[in-house]
Length: 376
Image 1 (cartoon, rainbow, N blue to C red):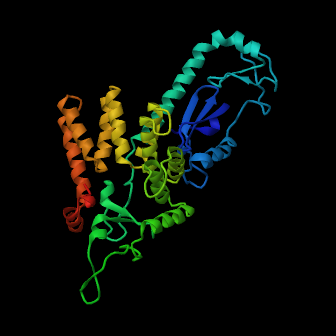
Image 2 (cartoon, rainbow, N blue to C red; image 1 turned 30 degrees about the vertical axis):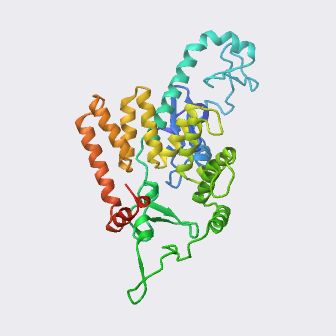
Image 3 (cartoon, rainbow, N blue to C red; image 1 turned 180 degrees about the horizontal axis):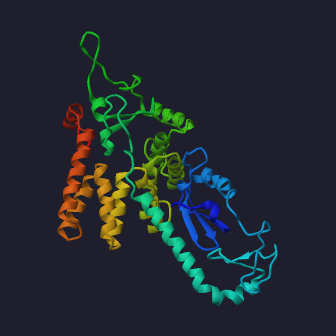
């Protein structure tokens, strides 16, 4: 949105937090119109885009260039009785558009203001939903990046890569399985980390490494420990409360899998009350960070809600991230008339493009040797 800021006569600026990612909606009330934007749209003086709290702070620089009233006093006026003064500060709780001198005036003016109030609230809600959809359906980056050894994209399927507690790296199944040779060309023992060459740890040593990496705020180490508490594995007691605490911590550090699992907790009531809306919220956070499973789950929820068009968008993004079950769902939408032949063709092309990015001879050999190395 392009706004001629110096020409605005600003009545008020209201800030809404629309999700836990920290992005805000700025509602700028002019004497003639209402301008709504997200903090990610704010352009700073140096030309760099800012968001979150930094973006909100930058609003001060913009507001310094705005004429706020015909006089510098900017006197508030009661919308009911017309009284002026600094004590007119009882704002409408819903739209935040008008002020009153007291509760009595607010109550008396309610019937006159109701229609305008509801319209402003509706417009703000529509714009917030539009901005949220733009974020939600934006194509996310690959969740895991590339293998640090072969530099080929890591697969989204969890069996296609291994997390190393020694160095904190994700190694593809192909590089983890590949034989190691000495300088004479002889195959040698490969019971070491393929990246840092540290010997494979015992379970006790692995737990110590995970705790050490947690102290370094390693999100994957924290996620693994959360899974251990959830399932009661690796010597840890089953504790859903502790697991959720760790999931939230690692989610805040950028781990998409953690938010996906929080969504499952709310979906099935694991340590919390069943709450479909919260499950959807956390799956959205995970999907926006590249988690294909969370994206697939959102597609299923939209199908049940009767929103086949939104479901198709979710499935398409999931297919591009390598989720073959989403490909089958698009086929079902095509069979039922909710997707076109072109949609299904595009989905097939997206999946083939994904396979082209992750496939290698070494990974194929690892998958053929052991199902635990399957990567698609």
